[in-house]
Image 1 (tube, one colour):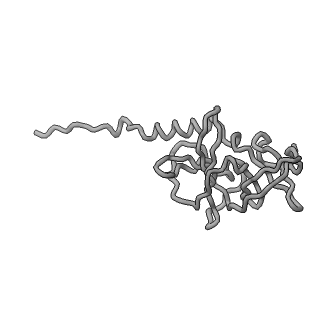
Image 2 (cartoon, rainbow, N blue to C red):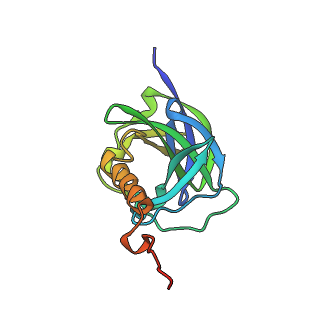
Image 3 (cartoon, helix red, strand yellow):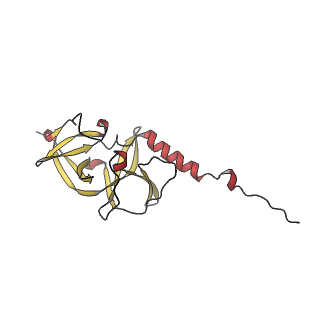
Length: 173
């Protein structure tokens, strides 16, 4: 008996990608994202998700695809990934969300060595669907601990007062 997995499909630059539905917590319409200075280009910023700051990463930039303007279809997929064996909530900015699909394990092939701008370690496999393929991403490998740690440290550094911002006593005579 073949196992069938469920995947949330989404688009980036006209290509169809998928994430295991077990890692997806929710899908949000594009909302206000607060930019954090001195973070990698693919780090759009953070959003307030029920009182919690959640980093939002642009998958187009992460995968070195051409940047596109946000549209009414642009969404944030909230993913729970394991980073150093610890659960982390991350937002992934995508062009549009399509649907949840079932793909049998027998219809998933290893990723080809050529023809993709995405690093091989991000790809779990290629799912055959109808006449084409869906690129199945590994949600635990898309974003590294080092990248997210660097983004967090930049946010902390920018929140610290600088020497020029220290209060100065002014004596009046």
